[in-house]
Length: 310
Image (tube, rainbow, N blue to C red; front, side, top):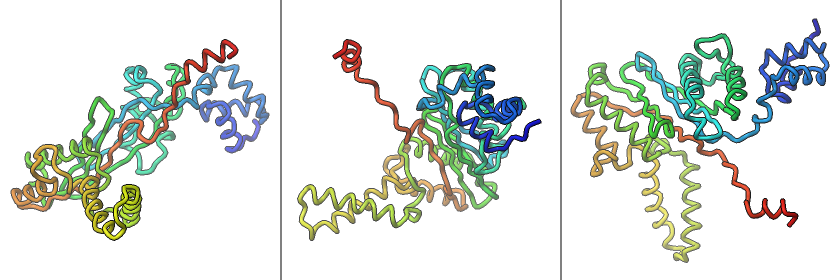
């Protein structure tokens, strides 16, 4: 049996997009000859998904899953190229199983290397097979886990059929408060708030100094463009910054449920009602495809002109 290095396996995988085990087997069969190994992969049809590997996948689904004890939860985004394929039952089952695997995995783990529940194949191997079957590129783009210790819970909320997903970790001063219906409602309302209003931070105390500075520079440039007097700008920037903080901090936002109150005011009222401290400690929010640069459609007139020799 030929000695095969992981570097060779990686190179073959990069060239063909075939599974790791298939790449290793092909290299062993080819006695380490890279070009022969590529030929073996092609002949066996294991590289049929390679041509799709570079395709940009911006559709798909955001899935959330919370553990049975409510103490941990995960948020996962799995992408595919078209909205039609995103509704495919096999794709949705794959995304659901990826979330199940994520819930059992350690934080920061490479999900591709984890076993897909219900089988012996890894998530990456299953992804490759599904790409070949559905004819579209699929990516397990990102995932995040939140957990709570002691009294409290992790709550999940998925909006618009998987277009936006949220997990929120909330803590209470005692277990009795954690089981109160009013606490459950507040946490659920807060998760919907995050989905709808897309805050960046829980509280103003979490906003980094450099983020404030960056926003101040933006406001300064805007005021200069508007021709505002230089001496008046600091006060105006101060007001703009305060308004910006209310937009990006969850607790300072106006509630989408009770518009005459902030989320912080609702939290404080609930804490008084239950006689226990209530804390929204962390959240994660995924919007499907955010940050992915979508390909622009070709200029039809230019394509026709090109075909006509123009």
